[in-house]
Length: 113
Length: 110
Image 1 (cartoon, helix red, strand yellow):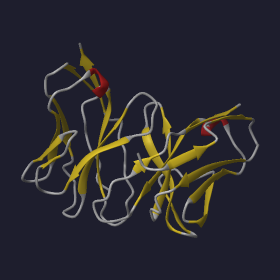
Image 2 (image 1 turned 60 degrees about the vertical axis):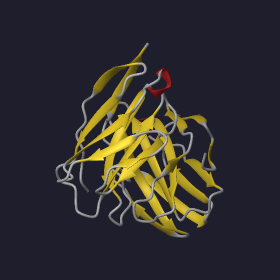
Image 3 (image 1 turned 30 degrees about the horizontal axis):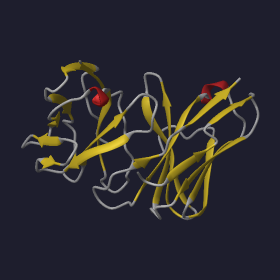
Image 4 (image 1 turned 90 degrees about the vertical axis):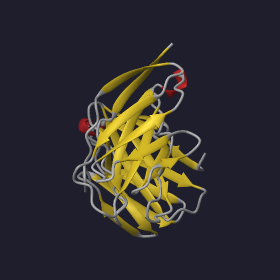
């Protein structure tokens, strides 16, 4: 299995609180991604990174920001959490080559009360 | 980005082949077809991918039609552990932004 960890694995927070989720990889892959998964929606891309300090938006980026200061870490921040951001968040990595698969982390379950 | 259409659910008898179809009629010439599965609440697991030719690995086979508008994932001898949601995705044309649909929920029956 690809070396991807996410922390925390579970978090309960209150509306309006800032929250940061961390994705850490040991594979030295160039690309990293954050997805959220909600019932009836499959996985939806929030943001992705194509290198250190290089990030771009996905299809559901509103209310989220990301940062990547090192190859191995990709942080997802909810500046002011809302109940609509209650979800399971998955990080993924890929080498970024044409036809290259993504490897997913175990997920973080976030509940915003 | 191209999108895909999959049946919402399928059943398969244990030991039999499971054939999961996917339509991707708007696929671009340089886009790959990927298959992933998600068992319970775990992170999605890569299964196989292809561009034009049929592909086989230790987990499954991927059959892509000549016009590339549809494909079929084949699990040759399904087991109870293959019960999962299977996602067909097209992408990889430089942006690496997958669009996941809701997938096919495969239930393997004993």
